[in-house]
Length: 407
Image (cartoon, rainbow, N blue to C red; front, side, top):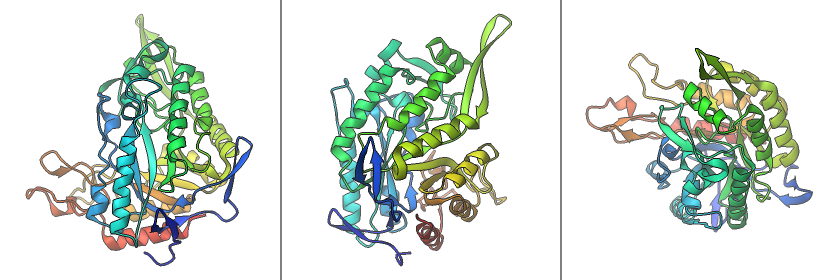
């Protein structure tokens, strides 16, 4: 796996698996030209994103990188997960970078221990239910919605309003001032407008949530404007590539049945998404990384048009896999991802050179919720195949193929 890796000196550590496209060493941003950081290439551990499914904004992501330390050398990148509430707990002037600094310290420790296979990070800041209370109070107060992942009732801020978006851009300015020049922060996820997860396009499908959003002033036009405006939310980051998860735009509407308002989910729209993708690339040039978080084999039906557009627009492209779930005795799994090798092949065929993979987790008395990339120590009553993760030879082979596909 180490053969063919391009190594650059980064914070005193030889960095492996970092690729930058020939001719794309310069990026245009707001009329200025700045050298951009090398792209991540290979496999990226998704880290701990459990806070996005929580009702409490006091949730603390785990950035101990225990999966990478448990199987060193298998990953080329790592996602640092933090929440907006952690970073700005009290007001717009407050700024607590400690959660990110601590994660970077852990990453530096990993790289010092395993200098032949070091990693860099993708920074992901979650908002939605884990935005600070003062943010949720902006522009009229919090809105109650249900998470589509688990039905949990949460409160979110009015993310479509200018007041909210100004607060978000202020945070990005603070983050960029501290970390844009840090070579360990390879990329930043665009999580603007997100309220269901850390993925901007995802809306609630249930009637109650939709009615509550419209009552608070939400509209499809405002959501679209938020997504389009998010392209410039990261203008303060001038050297760091931005990863923008993309799927079909999810329209919401209201109707009346038996005298009661009812929220309606859908239809989805590809033309709106296509326009935003095109504007993203036009504005950020080579810093604009197109992404999708449902990578599978075959491509999910609902995202086929997104993948076609990605094919046409070309690299740089990254993916996150569908949830792998737990293996079944029948050969399938409780999640959507079953064929890992096929998934990697689909990613490469669709311009990808980096794939974010789920880590295995031990919960519920030792039973893994996701059978991800890494092996784990399960309770004695759990089948061994549910704890095995993916083989070292497969991980090395997939990483090598992705690195070879880098722009």
